[in-house]
Length: 256
Image 1 (cartoon, one colour):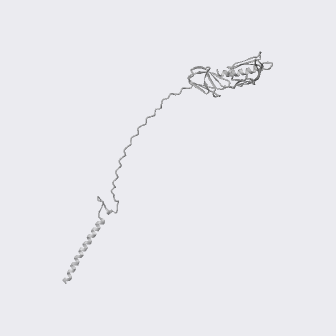
Image 2: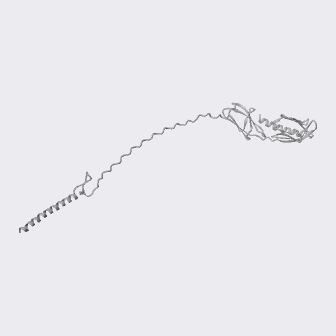
Image 3: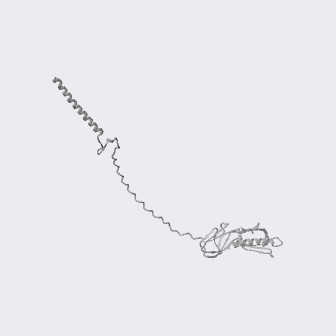
């Protein structure tokens, strides 16, 4: 019987050890499941109240970049200084005309052609004449002061178209021809060598002797002519002389 009793004691002691191991394991598992846990190295999360937020340590921030060196402000540019120039003189007298190139006279002295402008006219009263071939002259009295004076001249057309048949007596015989006058001048047309052409201003002598029935004409630097005609009176010669003389006088007034 003693053989059978020893194994029972051994079996009972082993069971106790097994039971003890099981209890220790259960206790360790409960402690693991229900006990506090370590999070990271410093924080502990209580799991008894269920899962909660997990605190995460912030990542270290990157270092701020060093500020770039500031460029120096550009130096101010010097303000350009405009060169000092003398203003042009003010034209004290301007003369224009409907015919460009008309002659301008101040106090009977030729000073230029239109369009004309001058700053050299002395202050005070002056007489201005403007003339052009084929037109009646223009004249005006002006007063030059500090305010510029402008003359807009307008011409009246000089009309001259006269012709008369004449006879030019010679010492021996005579020649016949046609005496023609226009604003461009006077000419004698004939088959003889006595023919000529001259400007109206080139007539040094030009007169009519009605009783003697003679038209007297002398070209400056040229010959002298005494014309007559075969008419019973000197009416045609008189009209010719009158028209030429008036046209010539109108031109002369414009150039004074």
